[in-house]
Every structure is written in C-alpha cells, then in structure tokens.
Length: 396
Image (cartoon, rainbow, N blue to C red):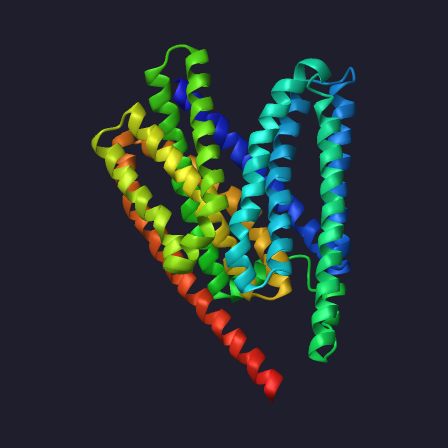
C-alpha cells in the first residue's frame, strides 16, 4: 500500500506539473516573440524571483495551508525545469560546436556543485533562518543569476564584434532582435523536424526508464528498511555518491570521453549500461543492485548524457534553441513522467511484477541507445554541413 500510495502521489505530481507546463509554454512563446534573448532571459528569472517572494508572503501569512504547499510544489517543479532549460538554451546559443564539446562538462559540474552546496546551506541555515526565510535567500541567489546572464550575453556580444572586426565583416544583427514566430512555434518546429522529433523520443525514453527505476527503488527500499530514518540515511548516501561521482566525471572526464568515442557513442553509453542494470534487476532485484544501478544511471545522466544531449542543439537555429528546446525540456519531459507513472501503475495493476517490468525495460533501454546514437551521428553531419557552408560562404 505504501508503494501504491507513493505511485498515486507521483501520478498527481507529474500530471499537475504537466498541466502547468502546458499553461506556461504559450506564455514563454509570447515573451520570446516580443523580446530578444538578452532581454527576455532576465525577465524570465525576474518572474521566478517574484514567485519566490509571493510564496514567502503566503507562507508567513495566516492563510498558509495545505493548498498553498501543493501550489508551491507544482510551481517549484515548473521553476526547476524552466530555469535549467533556459540556462542551457543560453549555453547552446553562446558556445559553438567545438566549445560545447570542451566546456559543457565543466559547466554541468557547476550545477553539480550547486546540488552539493544547496542541501549543505539548507542544513546549516534552516535552524537559524526558518524554512520560509530560505525563500528570500533563493531569490537573492536567483538575482545573482540574472547578473550572470547579463555578463554572459555582454561577453558574447563583445566577442562577436571583435571577431567580425578581425574578419572584416558585419556582426549578425539577428542576435539582438526578438525571435518572432507564433507563441506555439516550438511545437510546430518539432512537428516539422525529424531531428527535433528524435530528441523528443530520446527524452521520452529517458523519462520513462528513470520513472520505472524510481518506482522500483521505492519498493525495494520500503521492503528493506522498516525505519524511516534508515531509509533517509540510505537515500542520503546514494545522493552523496551520485554527486561526488558526477562532479569528478564532469570535471575531468566528460570532455575526454566525448572527444575519444564521439557524441554518438556518448549518447548511447548510459542506456546500454542501463539495459544491463535492468537485466540484473530482473534476475536479482535487491538493495545492493538497485543502489549500484541508480548511482551509475544518475551519475551517467548528469555527467555525460545531459551535456551530450545539450550539444545536439548547437547546430540548430536560435528559434529551435529557445522555443523547441523549451518545449522538449519542460512539456515533453514532464509529460513523459506523467505517462510513464500511469503505465507503471497499470502494469502493476494487471499483475506484472517488478522483475517483469525490469525485463520490459531492457528493450526500451536499447531503443534509447539506438536513438541517441543516430542523433549523435546526425548532429555531426549537420555540424560538418554548417562548417562547409561557412567556408563556401566565406570564400565565394
């Protein structure tokens, strides 16, 4: 019953967040239509700062209740996906193909460092400041992020002007104008592009398998520990292992792995390993196995798959980088979570065991690997075509 209740709770969470994503996406499309990225990025972060301040006021007022907490939970889920998506849109817009391969692992390491610093700061400060007051600290840190985006866009503009001056041609004026298009352009771009549709499939397979693994983890941990404190300690140990391993790989290995085996195999590596992990869970579902599989899967996702997936966008136009990417990172991501949660519950309802679900997940993992491999190959071809066009345009 505990696992069923957990599944039902996650079904509600994923479904509510998915609906919120559907509502926010047209708003994002309207903003990108009217304002250039150097302007709308600070606006988006300022919007989330305002949300933090609003919830701070609600939590410190007399009207704070369970519905406010639920609303904050959904809003925080939207914020987490949107803020990260917009950040990576800026990264794929600023850095070119070769820079992305060299730098995205290190940049991702900054996110991992934040994942380590955030809980540590919370543990130290919550007893002194209180839970609600931490929202003010979050707003201040997000304000710092606004300053960083301004500095990055200014640096990008100065570098582009310097490069254009040295090469004797004008800078691209399109970087400082609004993206235009309709408010639902991201969805239309995906529908018209097999490449973007492939990235959608990649995201859906990833979220489906991550959800399946999460539910299996919940069941195995519930059966292994009767005390909630023991479960908390187990999860904390897993998180520590994931973050430490991720930070090491991002800082020292991600760029080398991509350079050595190529983007295609970098995208296929983690799902291939995950297929082996699901086979182990099918044959011997136990605490040690689920811990090893989850640590390897999450560290591989954060350190290798996520940076490699972001590199897929560097060969696309600016509208795809901001609008289509945002739809994939938010609506498709959370929609995959919602659908896979219901599928998992449905499989259990018809009597499929956890081991049986693990067996079914093996071909899905291989499909994820094949999709990632083909997208990596396609991306390299697009990058080569773009480089050839630049050379031809420069000499013609």
